[in-house]
Image (cartoon, rainbow, N blue to C red):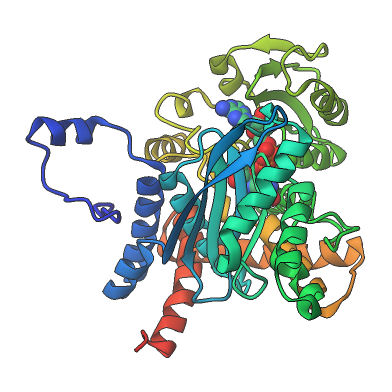
Length: 442
Ligand code: NAD
């Protein structure tokens, strides 16, 4: 039964006006993440003290730091690094640059990283961070100074054996290379090269892994392929819509296109377009590279949000922000599968409606785990001073993700629970086992 409140807020009936207001408001991202965790904890019968420990992050770091702008003025930035759990290995998770970054969001994203790494059986914990600002409004020079100053402010709170950032929304391989270089130059000279693994998602030339830039999209497509096999669904000619055409959405759309899928609708922060004849993902990506967004793309009709969500497709891929599939948008969806590229794109009501409509869900902690999996490969390559071939990376990624998919489906069938709860369950079982062996210090 879904009655947990994992954020520690009182669960009494709403009587006073403030309680009533609270009962009527939508749950926050962290509350949604807490409910998802609670469902799996119930299904597993998770030890009570582990519920308490895992319901909050271990460390919450907030830094305010000044940066000189191009015009000589100074601006103060707020940066976050939330470390949820390191019971399975070093903290691991992306760095987000976005105007909406806030503590509650980063706490949820950090917890999702813990469950994701545990599900994929990667020896990492969970973390997330970011800076609350709009990176599209800054020059390259300002972005570099913001990133370097943030890395400096984080100091020894990150490190290749401690906490390993990666790209997320608004950041990329260049951001990671600046972080790496700043960190390497802040430590001792003789250990400089051993610090390369402080971040993943670097460019291949600066120590990144082949296949990392497409890894999240690639992993998502491997999961869609598994789903299509299990459901005897032909991907050739399948219709797809994608929300968010950045690192994840564009890569997934391009790889699916090579398998014969037709991209018919795309939405990003600038607008939405539809073309029932098919949108060419590579050309759209080039257009966005030039203009900054899908708005105005000539080979498609501009549509509103409702029309975008209501597009007749087989597969919908949310690959932008959290809480996009909701009580308002879920009823509009006309698809067979939601493959969650974004973290936390579906809220609790959205999830209920999808289930009611019989729409299958490949949950975020599985569907977008290709990124952290290849990040792990990058970290291994850095430690061993190796560079793997793309074929090697893709083969290992496929093996690791298919194993997680099959485990999730087995648990879902055995326990009659949703894919999401089943995915959590496997991760939680592994974490519980380790806690039971190690105990709590002292
Ligand atoms: P990105 O910055 O490369 O792209 C983000 C996209 O979302 C852009 O197309 C942007 O226009 C769009 N967007 C932003 N606000 C929007 C809005 N309000 N409505 C519609 N679209 C909007 O980011 P990304 O790395 O592709 O990350 C996308 C999602 O995938 C995030 O939820 C992220 O946490 C998740 N994710 C990313 C990775 C990774 O390796 N990059 C790994 C796992 C999960």
